[in-house]
Image 1 (cartoon, rainbow, N blue to C red):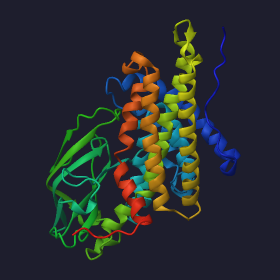
Image 2 (image 1 turned 180 degrees about the horizontal axis):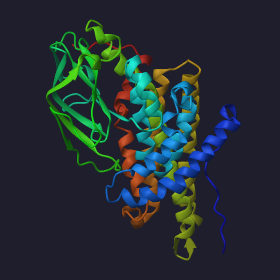
Image 3 (image 1 turned 135 degrees about the vertical axis):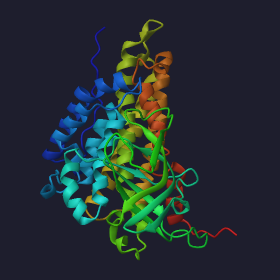
Image 4 (image 1 turned 90 degrees about the vertical axis):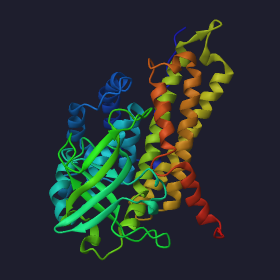
Length: 402
C-alpha cells in the first residue's frame, strides 16, 4: 500500500509572517537539509569537526551576520529571523546552529575593535569563544575566582575555566575575570571582561587547553582552560570598565543572556522537529505484525503529542523573539521559553528514539544525535533549575536564607 508522507515542517505564524521571512526560512531549510545534514550524519558519529568549507558557505549566505547591522556588513535582521534560521539549522545539526553565535562575540568589543572586526565576523572570518564558567562556578557567575592582576601595560590572568567551546579555533576569547580579591560580602564586585586575541588553532603563551570528553555537541571541541600569567594589553579590558573604575562586568554578562536563551530555545525546537520528522517517516516504513507501526493507535497518539509539544514552544518562541525586536524584552518570558523548550526537546527526542526501537540506539540513525544534543539544552545558557529560579523569584516573594 502506498503511503504519502505528510510534511510536518512548520509555517511561520500569521502574526509574524512576511514574504521576506518565508524566503529566509526556505533558504535556511534548503541549506540545512542539502548541505548540513549529510555532513552531520558522517562527522558526528566520528566526532569530526565542522568543515571550513561548510563555514565558508554559511558566511556567503550571511548566517554569521544575521544580527549585525547592514552598515557593518551584516544582514541587519532581528531576533525573529535569528530564531527562524537557528531552528532550521538545528533540525540538521545543532552544532552548526550554534557556531553562528561565535560572530556575535565581536559585538561585545569596544567601539574601535567592533568597527574593525564586526564586518569580518559577519562573513565568518573572525569568530570568538567565551570563557566564563569555572570548576567551582557555573550558574553562580559571582563565584568566579579567575584573577586579572594589573601590571605595566596590561593584565596577567591566572585561573581555570571550564566549558569553553571553540577555544582552539577562535580568533579571540572573552574571559570573565576578577580584578579585585574575592569578597564573600560583595561577590559581584570587581568582575570584568577581557578579550584575549589569538591565532586560530593555537593558544597564546600562558594559556593551555584540555578537550572535554563530552557525549554530544560534536563538530567542535570544548575545553578546560588553564591561565598561567597570560598577558592581555590594557585596551583588551572591555566596555565602559576600561578606565579600571567601572563595575559593569557582572551586569553585562548577566544581561547578555536574553538573546542566547531564545537561541537555545530555537535550537531545542529544531532538534525536536528533526526527531519528529524522522520518526514520522520511520513509523510508516517499519512493519511489525503485518502492519506499519504507524498504524497502531499508541504510536499515532505519541506522534500527535510530540507535534503538539513542539508547536506550543514554537509559538512562544516567536512571541518572545518579537518582543525583543520591539524593544519590549522580558527576561522572565525568555527564561520560561528556554525552560519549556529544553524540557520539551529532551522529552520529544527521547520518545522518538523509543519509537525507533533498537535502531534508535545506534548511530545509523540521526535520532540518537538529536537526543544527545537535546539533553545539553537543559544545562547550558542557564540550567532548567536556574530558569525556574528566575521565574519563581519574579512571581513569589522570597525570604532570605539564614
